[in-house]
Length: 329
Image 1 (cartoon, rainbow, N blue to C red):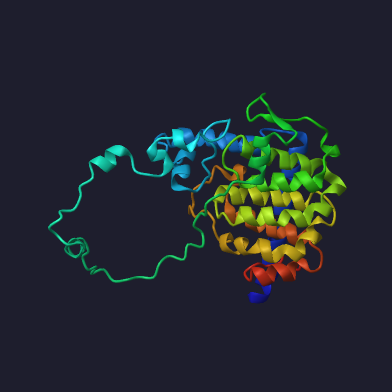
Image 2: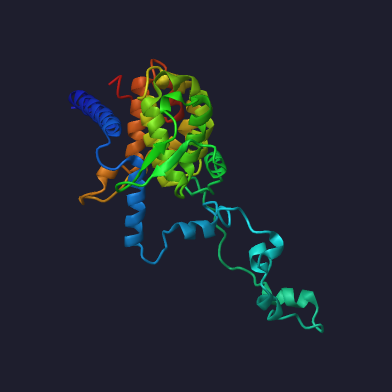
């Protein structure tokens, strides 16, 4: 039975590999023909749907800013207010009402007596803390935000149909990819618009029309890719995985050029490889949105193996031991 089952498993693995390649190629064709909303427009639609579903604002960007997961940005379009003209609470100190109404300790009691009353021995057994491998990290300001606020990027938003488009002030073919493409990749970790919309859509536009200009820039893209993946944010990881698929398929030898950098990129892949949606026999109606991290990781690894040359599989296997080849099957 084991001998009979092996060819069946290989056939299924090859079929799954072809399916992932077909999905990536369809996504690439969809970018070139602009059918339906663009990848950046899809993120805008998801934000609008999230506001409808979570009306209490528990999933809003403001809550993430309060938790310190997303940068707060400047106070206005002209920058921050002077510190002397800001309220005391905004400076980091306690407001005046809190300081006036605060109860002061009685002078006849020693601080040691107050400390002994406030501290109580804990009877709960100590347990090891969580590893936090999949917990989100704070997203820092990107170079894209700094360049866009300064007005150094030749782009602006074209307010048209649902989702919008980018109006390039110059031809994309005339851009210096060594300068602009790493900046756009660095902006892929942004979660606030217009930075996120412009960086995501601008990256896809540059990958679509880059051609031979993309390959020499690959070493400069590793640090932005690694920084975005290390945020451990599911939305940012999903966006970066889709961009990686388009990057590998945007030209020849790009997949092979990424092989020496697998040790910087693939550790986060190994963490989220098994993060799938376990819903039993129910139907996942959001499959078309391609937000499942586990499926995206599997598709990306298979595309990297198919376009990475002879050394791709052994390097992927070294970083992700549970990965099975879709080419050698």
